[in-house]
Length: 256
Image (cartoon, rainbow, N blue to C red; front, side, top):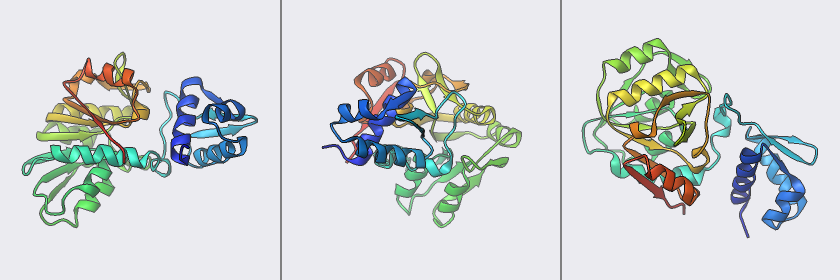
């Protein structure tokens, strides 16, 4: 029998695909009672991922939708698996860029405390977390702080990135697809993400399965601009095959 997070992932996938999910229909798919589905819908709505309507729910995501910080705790096991797989790509020394995001933050949480790196970041939470690690040198990228991501954007951030070169960039994304590439809902975020791709010798994209095959408002790069994509084992075989047709290295991290 599926756990609540597993059921909710299925419900969210159906809502994203069809724009709507019905209580009775999804109860039949999951083999659970309508009351169980309603509780799952309540949990998803509390996380800002759906909106309850009579008989079911509507997907909130659209091309311009961006979840707030309160809803980024979803898929925590998947994000932990992805971050764990990315640990092996942290160099023992040198300069790395770590973008603002929930999965990249998890990478920093899991990183060894004695890691000797210079870390460039536009993330206030990541900068604060690393400030307690004396072996790391933290370089904060200035700019306007967005409350949605707690990351800096706009001209100051883009200008700083234009003069920086890093060994590896660890990046996130709101959406990615073979047809439309890497996309995000916000114009300012897109500019910063584009600059980050250009500043890195190698780039590693951390993207859980819910991002695969999706499209958002602003394009900032192509899949071929990324050296490695790490996703989780919730990704379909079709999505993984599509990634491997465009990206040099694709890692599917197993969830525990």
